[in-house]
Image (cartoon, rainbow, N blue to C red; front, side, top):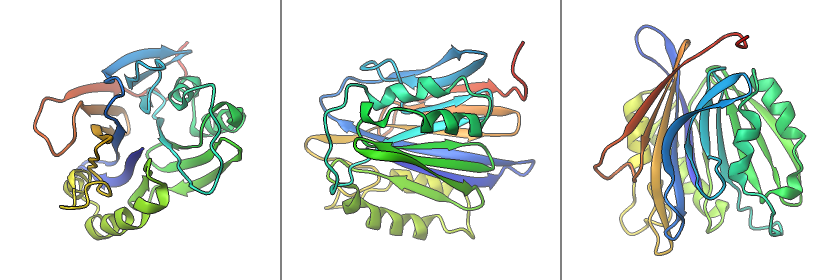
Length: 249
């Protein structure tokens, strides 16, 4: 359960991509560990760690590749118990040198090993969105990063939150106003009396437990991690990762 947005914007000196993610989880789930630097093959990546699987839901590598995974709760498909956590998918892809190689590797995954998921692979200029898991065949959709994009899911059923959250996103983050402040406000938004539908979500059994922002520049990636809901005060952790255009020797 997450809400993820991709927003291309300008710092005044270069075009960057901001990738923001609200992570929604059960109140009984173990707390995640803050971002750390890990090595995957010839690549290095920064990612917060889910201690349940030693994997993650969001990461960025020094190849300039960011990866985010969301649960899918389609409602109309049977969801069988899966032997592997969806958080284990990201470490399998972080050694890749390009979006295309990561996409090809992801499409070769055995979807039956995972509950339904949506995998977002993105560079500063293009993205690949892969849906699969459970009983469905893995498929990829290619998107140019030319406008703000949003992806969302809910344990109550994705269809329940898709329309209200997308309508809010289109109002707050229109293509004509790609501003970081608007993206941040969207991720902090909560409707009074409808917190279960909100982007910054709260229910009796689950809530938004963290917020992660990746700022993907030409030569640098910066991950800022809030181990709490983005509408609450508290400390953040920031890590920078220089990007390498070639595979290290």
